[in-house]
Amino acid sequence: MDFAPQNELETALVRAVKEPAARPEFYRLLLSSDLLILGNLAGDQLQIVSTKNKAGTMVHPVFSSVPRVQAYIREKQNYLTLNGHALFKMTKGAAFVLNPNSAYGKELLPEELASLLDPDAHVAKPIVLEKETKVLIGQPAVYPHELVDALKVEFAKRPDVLNAYLVQIAFGGRDEPPHPMIGVETTGDWDQVSALIGRTAAMVSPGMLLDAAPVDRVKADTMTKSFLETKPFYTAAPTRTH
Image (cartoon, rainbow, N blue to C red; front, top):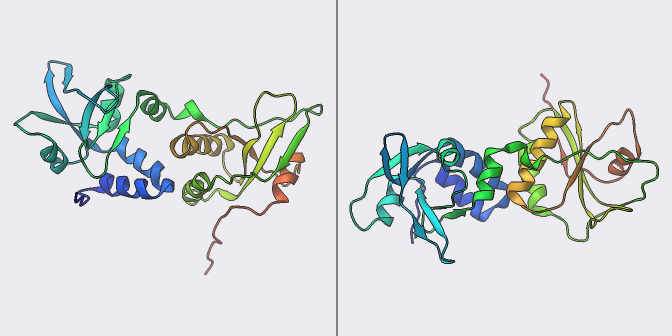
């Protein structure tokens, strides 16, 4: 089935299917773009058409362009245009399917949409090490390439991110498996960088256990030294001078 992208959202959708690193951009455009839904506005009440997916769950069809609507409907139906963020905020708890019966589409689950609407829900928290805590640091047996590729794209948009590192960490006395930890050397606000890491991980690798910590060469604590012993997976491009 042919799929010629009609707008930025559809271009991002095609890329996100092929390249996990492009998923954050797709989600951003999903919220900021105008989407089409089958239904009516009755006063201030939104009435949306529902259908069942393959699992038998009720979902609302939503479309990224008029051609996707036209390819789906078999008879004349009303459709509305709503901003993605406004639509999903009005319908919290509902499930959607983007471009059903199309070559490129996606199911949008309630918990997935809730995390998009609340960007702080998956903030990567910095770790504060206690002296008594035993810590094992190394490299992951399975390297999270998709997450790293996505973070490279996101960090490249921020001139305050200088270097980024990845290690695997395991804390003694904690009921959690070894997992990746991202270290970032930044001249900006750490909370913003940490939130960016958490949001990106939620979009690209949902469910992944992940920690984050700032890399401070001045303080050079235990974690910073461990990060600096590894090769950064991201380094900011040098600034050109004239």
